[in-house]
Length: 267
Image (cartoon, rainbow, N blue to C red; front, side, top):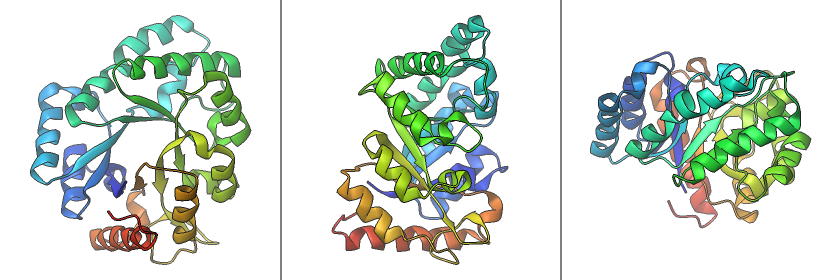
């Protein structure tokens, strides 16, 4: 368990440069968001792995490239495209993960309203999960506003349909944007949550650096998740307008680690 940083915090800076920035900010655990086809080239991925290794940084997770196009390639009514994409543009993420040492693949899934039934969506996502499991990897559904996964009720049905192999990434800001209290969301779905994206918010805005101007009770949240038996990482995921400088990211990670340590979770 660790407090980490997503390369998404530095977008649209190129991915490898974002990894360097995350290392320089003091992160020891990171998530890498893939952003271009060229970034799947073996030498490119090996270079990112070397950057991480030389800085003592662990890659916990990878975020799919083209999360906005998953609906078209994997979850449209044209089923042939699913069979083609799952063995090409989707599966290539596994090679990246093996090289980087990552275990978790983050996916947005189908955008609302979508052109297939929920059952068909569950079936296809379940097949992607089984593909990952065969390689020792976890393919995870993230809760995302304007996607079917914004609904806790749908995610609960998805978990019941897929069974024990269903895994989730829980994103605090996405829960806020959906209008659902993150604590309520976690209460309903904690048994499926394997990875968490964190950010802060207040009554005026969301998705900004923790431990600054926000009101979210991270101490309570950490304790709640630990009481549920959560053993994964907490990854700070922001956009470039969510903080003023990299030092704020460093301070946030340090303060959040102190919160966890106060709960006798030594990092």
